[in-house]
Length: 245
Image 1 (tube, helix red, strand yellow):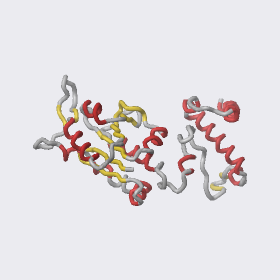
Image 2 (cartoon, rainbow, N blue to C red):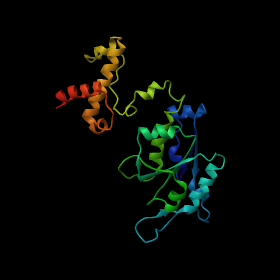
Image 3 (cartoon, rainbow, N blue to C red):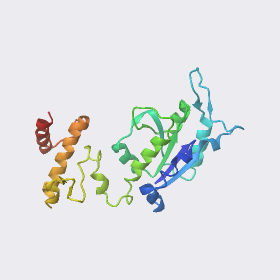
Image 4 (cartoon, rainbow, N blue to C red):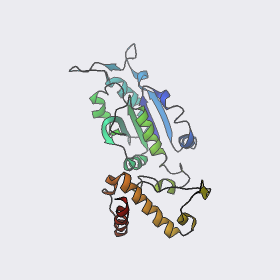
């Protein structure tokens, strides 16, 4: 996968994107991430990238010319199949379903805005998806872009050791993840649930599903309402509700 990030602050990605799983994915040539400084493409003498909004109002708006030229440069060696994402508090809320959707793309271009946003003509003519990571406002699009890149990268084949590593995780199945335990069996007089030590995979699978349903009902009941539940799931939920209430 190729990811091109258009940003005023490429240095914000250094360190975070050059460590851990994302670094390994880049070293293994599973993903190629490049950062283009939008200011480098400004055609004016002082490399100015913002101006006052037409119609008045507070703040400044990023001008279209640097974005269009940066985008042209970013995509010149890519095929026509490019998904272009603008990080915006007005966008669709990012979730695991979108992460899976984006992970299937060959080429992503991510636009990071600042100030009061970017000229609408950039959005209308270049952007395919406006994405938000939550109902709050940040200084710019860099942190949301980094969050999204991290989420997408770990879904790519070969990045994690086993596909099961992410398939069991929170949100992949629509539920929050079940509790995890490791050695020692007992710590500070607190023991690991016996079922996990039993070696009975059917019972372990049942326990994990039960615990996922329980934690989701307790913390994010809205997720339950979105799922197609089996009769067994519904039976478990009714049992769980008895002691949650």
